[in-house]
Image: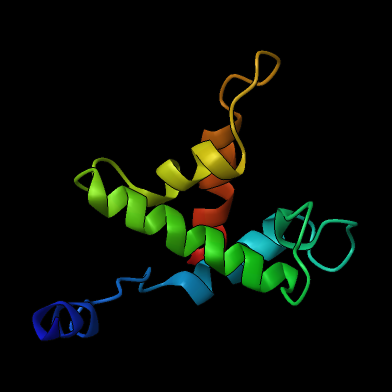
Length: 105
């Protein structure tokens, strides 16, 4: 039983190294404080703020992105989930990622 415990304790948690800066940029791109859905988050769970929900999404998608081999730019990968393309707006996620990237500079 001990080896299992030591393996669990030594597990390294990987989080997006620029999550806070990215969340700040997303907040601005999604309308800042002048919107019904801060950070673009439409539903939060009890005890979670929209910012924390945004950070959770960033870190979750970052882990997914690392797991698939970090192909392409992370911001465009995140954009596919945060602001997916639609039939009416086929490049919506790319435009969103571009705006967020410009805000982060």
